[in-house]
Length: 237
Image (tube, rainbow, N blue to C red; front, side, top):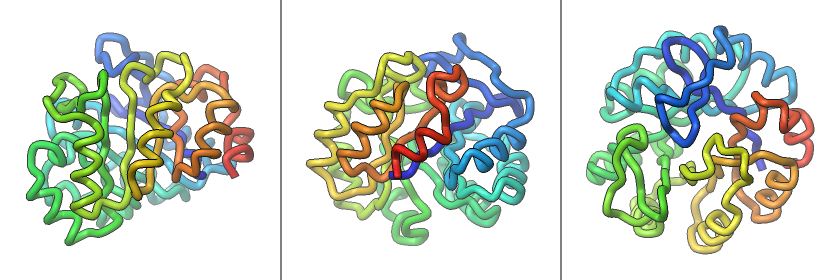
């Protein structure tokens, strides 16, 4: 299982939100590139980036910073947040991004998702952001009427190879990850599953590894010192 340390970008800084609430934001670094290089030094091979401004407005204010991180960190980078058209996908792919994560567009425009998956293959991943069993969209500011399981079923039928599943209620809360949810999804779907939200101990990492997940994203637990990244990578391997 891969460990993907996370950097959430807002106004060119590395920040964390509590349960997706933009009013509850903590700035952890003024220098996201240096942070990415620190992850690489700890043994990481992947990096999970989220453009929080992009998620809100459907724009790419951090595109140049993302390109620099890809070029200079030596990490395989996946990015999500506001990616709603092919122009944005192409911009990131040409910058060397490993995976582009579609969220809102994947749910609201299934034809677009089908088209992009056919065209870009495993470069396209989908974020399945769950709030009380329903998929949230638009930077988690709205909850749809589509259940997480129904959405995952659609993704599998379309041929999406990787999904990043977040339990919003656990995100940034340091209360442990939703092992029941990931156990259920891993058993139900034949897709590379990346767990996100609430992973706050090496026990969480161990439990997810035993489910044979593809990856686990570590955010706040790293920034607060609850998890040593090098140790988590060792456990995951």
